[in-house]
Image (cartoon, rainbow, N blue to C red; front, side):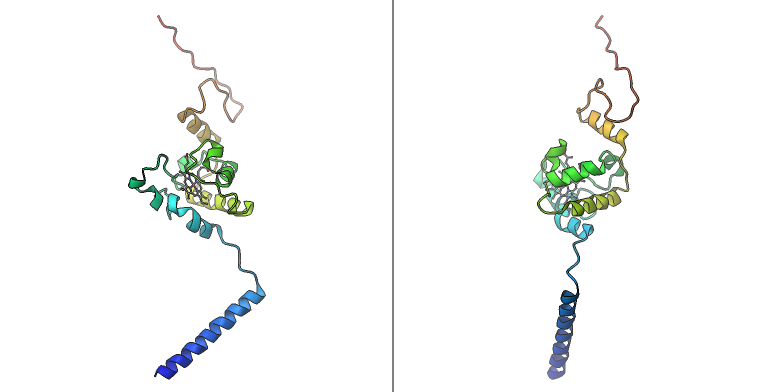
Length: 165
Ligand code: HEC
């Protein structure tokens, strides 16, 4: 019984080995897919589903800024693809966001970063909306009422303050 087991095991091992050798001779390993890069590097903070509930975001950690919920399409619509490429490459600080979002420019190629952005777009099921960006900037106090709009030709008269009576 043991002998059969061993023989079968040896045959199987030989088969696996030859298959592996054949594969490595024929082709280079495929570059990692965006979803694998995401699962390896991003889930600790953004969570396996991208909802921002990664292990680093436990209440005990008391992060001053929560990792974004990448599945919130309404919120994520404020970021253009270029915004995301910049943030992922250079870290949150470059876009005036939290530096808790680390820079990945030395980890990934630009092509891999663009693939990650495409993956984030799948998670949020959203497109860039300049109006959402403007709203978010105003809410964050990064845009004052009298500042020109960041996008769109439309002009509005500034809000008149009432003179003290
Ligand atoms: C150490 C925790 C951490 C890790 C790891 C992390 N992030 Fe973030 N990320 C954050 C935080 C915090 C924010 C929110 C920053 C803010 O709003 O000020 C953020 C925001 C973002 C945003 C939205 C902001 C923008 O300008 O696009 C995207 C997209 C993003 N992260 C993608 C990723 C990807 C892709 C990875 C993996 C390569 C990743 N993050 C890994 C913490 C993290």
